[in-house]
Amino acid sequence: MLLIHCPYCDQTLPEAEFAYAGEAHIARPEDPSQLSDEEWRDFLFIRSNLKGPHFERWRHVHGCARFFNAVRDTVSDRFLLTYRAGEPRPDLSTPEAAQ
Amino acid sequence: MMTSQTHDFTADAGARVRIEALAPVARFSLRVRAAGRPVLGRALGCDLPDRVGETARAGGRVALCLGPDEWLIQAGEDEADAIARAGADAYAEAPHALVEISDREVSFRVSGPAAADLLATNCPRDLDRLAVGGATRTVFDTAQVVLWREADDAFRLDVWRSFAPHVRALLEIGQAEIAAGL
Image (cartoon, rainbow over all chains, first blue to last red; front, side):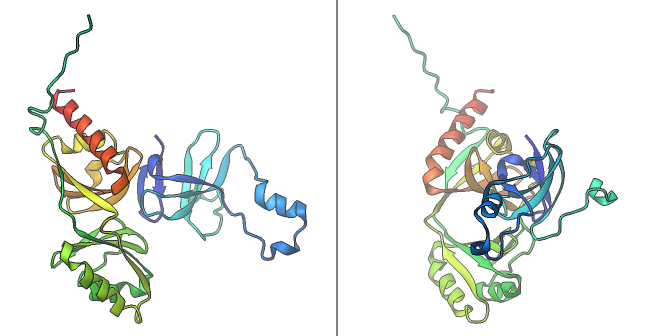
């Protein structure tokens, strides 16, 4: 079982308490009615589907119930880091992010 | 001819670990922003801890911090009306949501030298890291529970009513296995 660090509980806890919630840092368009059908389709459905470090949302659903963001390597399934929702996307090349 | 052998697991099942259903208590779910936390703590007569998993007790009332803005309040069954009134009186000063959930959950106590072993059959948490007096929301099998550690060898499980028969049955299977030395 994976162990995931919850940035709100500040504890590393078993995966069974968490739920995956899709790719992170996808901002909802300010005014959806101004978008073309293609742009709206891209917002709703088109995701990056990366191989390697992937920024994604998780929810500590059976714990503090908060959404947060995580960087997970989609090849090794290793969690590189987690951070609170609303914080800027971390730069993975900095030393503290690499820890 | 088919034969069947019936094991009597119940005879000595309580020696290593006991499972009891507990009497009803008043339960409330409280959601309030950080600014209103001291106001609600005063109104309810019990401090609201600000770290997830911490509990505070005062005058028979217990407050457990479940999330950054969420608390579980428990008290004697006859205090439910007083708690609801205290919340309503503090509403103008600190807007919040205080919802009575007394009937949503039932509680089980699991105690005895093998209590942690029994819970570990279905709970993924590292129970050694749950301090005495602390509590946490977690899962038991797939049912969400609030797990309280009352002593080194005594735990309490608050289970949603509809999941309670399932959780109880799993606990009793584990209890029989422990009694049988498995």
